Amino acid sequence: MLKIDTKVCSNKTTDFWMDLFAFWGIFIFVTALQSRADVIFNQTIGEKVASSNIIAVATFESVEGTAPYTNSNPPIAKFRVSKALRGCKIDQILSLPDFNVVPKPRGHRKSPMPPVPPTEKELRDWAEAPIIFPEKGTEYLLLLGQAKEKLMDGHIPYPDYIASPDKKLIEQIEGMLIFSIELKPEEDRKINSGSPIPISLTITNNSKAKVKFALSSLALTTSIPGGESISKMPPNSNEPQVVEIEPSKSKILNIDMAKLYTGIFDKPGDYWFQLDIPAQGGEMVMRHIEIVEKSLAYACSRASHILRVKVKLDNNTATLDDPVYLRLRGEMLPGKIEWTNKAESPNGERRILCLEGNLITYDAPDNHEILEQLENLLANDPIEWWSHAEDSDERFQIPDRTDIPESVQKQALLKSRLKELP
View 1: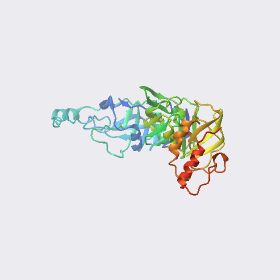
View 2 (view 1 turned 180 degrees about the vertical axis):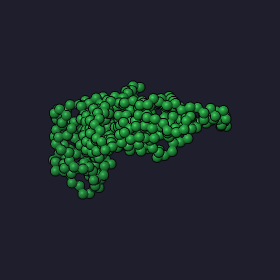
View 3 (view 1 turned 135 degrees about the vertical axis):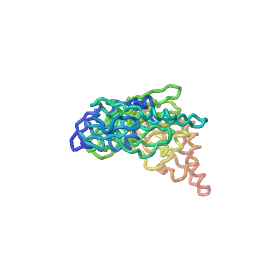
View 4 (view 1 turned 90 degrees about the vertical axis):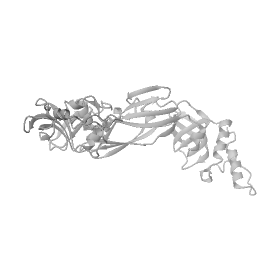
């Protein structure tokens, strides 16, 4: 639940409780307008809200004009604002021309046949058809204003007014007016099996009051390699669920989808997932990732650090003892780092670790087979990636030969660092 104490399009202070995060994104089938029943609108609700100068919940009051009211002689409908959301105030009277006018017949446009215009009778019947009015006091959701871009021919805009709007739809639009959200990254990605799946949510509070955004409101829909799928799943982890955002401020949330949705992204393969973000209007944000098998060639070729090290595990913290750096791009690692391989629990034995920063992307037992693969990979490393921390270590000394090329010396030194260690 979200409590907001703010001024919205009015000099009055509106206190309202919004069950903002109880709904999920859907393709909206609107049946409010007689002429558009069971129609899918090509313009999304988010696009409609963005292009609307006035947004309000209002009640039907009366009509103005010269009777009889028909499609060719429509009235001006009058509405009284009961909840002002944008560009209006409570009790303001809003006027809507062409209220409940049915679209003019367009004839037949079946391809490849030439278009057939409507007949004179069809046009006359349309022009003389009476306008149907609601009862006084009927509640409407009004979304009024000019669209920023003209829709393509044949596309159907989201309606300007909806009779007896659903409470969740109103709350949805309230949330859209308060929050705006940017999701990154946007491109497809390959992720090592077992590695984090980071996304960044930039959440902006557009209101004049402090508000809370609940991560528990997110919902994941995805296919899983092997034919399975899940639909609209809330987070199943103990990640922080609520963030507080000051008025007119933004907050960046760096989220690991693998932790937020534990057990979902475990299998190698393609995931086309959709993330419902209520503040976006319930519209689904689509992303694609490929989970790849954790392999030395893939993970360690991109690594900033490669080392042989004795690892002792205490809960999720790994203590690194006697590190031998085979690649060092950046600063040396701290003595303790987070251990992400839940399948392995080392207790002082030596491991091969490849890392990006402080994040382990590959680990394996320190054995001859792995060391052979590493030798082929490391042979092409530039000298800038070479660690000199072990130069004084007696275990890795080689004869000082000035009569052989530097590359040969480097290869000999690399072999010495790959020899069997206790």
